[in-house]
Length: 258
Image 1 (cartoon, one colour):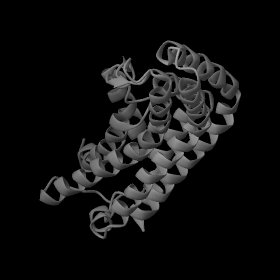
Image 2 (tube, rainbow, N blue to C red):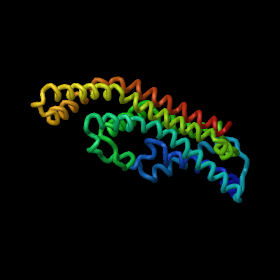
Image 3 (cartoon, rainbow, N blue to C red):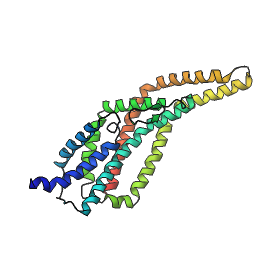
Image 4 (spheres, helix red, strand yellow):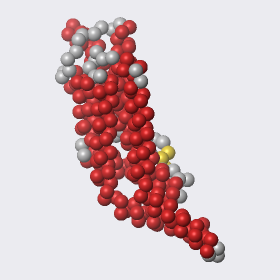
């Protein structure tokens, strides 16, 4: 009993980082994943991680509260960076929806419980399926357990955050996410823009045509044809996106533990 009470504070710190990571990380943070499963998975992974890391025994005091807050912030930052790269597919889908005319018909995303664009939701579900196919959920567990090599329990995460390097990294990641989303949607946006130009020329040369009646079905038809042609390329596209996501998580750990 004395040994358990001696290492219980350290185990709680490990549980704080891993559970906060699962609260934000994609796939694990989905609304349709039971809360009991999340808590149980975080607890058992905490036990596994606790048995592999080197730690000094801590006690419950005022410093311990600060250490607990640091672990929660580290887990939230890691999960947020991972989720940030998953939103690339939703942002690109919203760009395409605006061009196809689907932006007025948002649907409820079962993963997050919020409204999302139709094509963005389709791409997001496809990204989740490919992520699980690539064993990305296993890599997530490996990443959060391996994070203790970069950022141990006795870390100075708040000092590194105060230096501004983490904030700069998050801003760069925001810009990179929007750039990737626009690049992913660029082929369809360009094609649909050319259709708009053609319809505008048609409206000037043949005013008797009702462009509003012709244009909407035409853009939807061309959009679905282009989407069907681009589907095979999503495999390599999403694999590169996941590689960049794990690279960004490793970069964050380097900044927090430098």
